Length: 125
Image 1 (tube, rainbow, N blue to C red):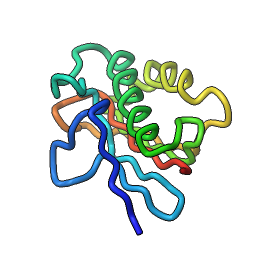
Image 2: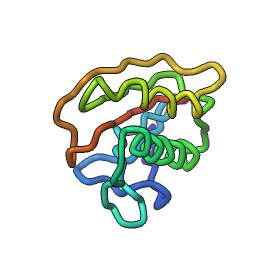
Image 3: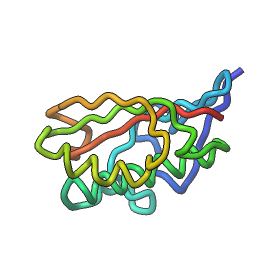
């Protein structure tokens, strides 16, 4: 059995996907970009500012699913430019300060809406 997660504390899906799906004790969160959930517009700013918005969106979704960022087990980070790695990592480390999840980070030169960062997440329920 699967449960679909939806919250207005995070941006609405901009395509045919769910914000997250819960299945078999996990919550699978779709990739989040730096969209303001109130306006559905991209947050202007550098990689640090966009990473902060992305992580707040992820946090809202995992909490709506009944989990937390501290229950994250795997994250994938997509950067439009690997030069933003240090800036992203500094913000990321504030959200995953204890027992951080496994992570992959890749450069993806064209992300939705031309954002600088996108992150997806898998967490335990």
